[in-house]
Image 1 (cartoon, rainbow, N blue to C red):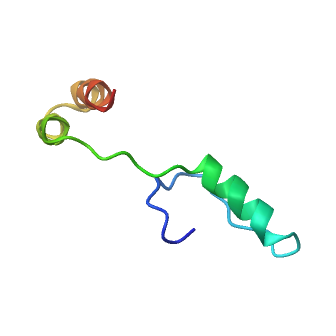
Image 2: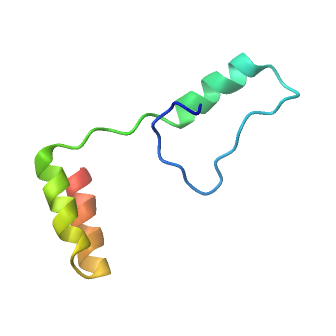
Length: 66
């Protein structure tokens, strides 16, 4: 779990020590897939979007990640 390159958000939980680890770990990994690599073009768009207003930035970041 600690080596998984995934986005950490509110509500992320660990494993229950009272239950079997294997099934919990399998479920956790399914729910938290690895981050996708961004192309150079997407990275440039995101960097430029950070320099703009919050709403314009959000729109461009969404488009870049599609």
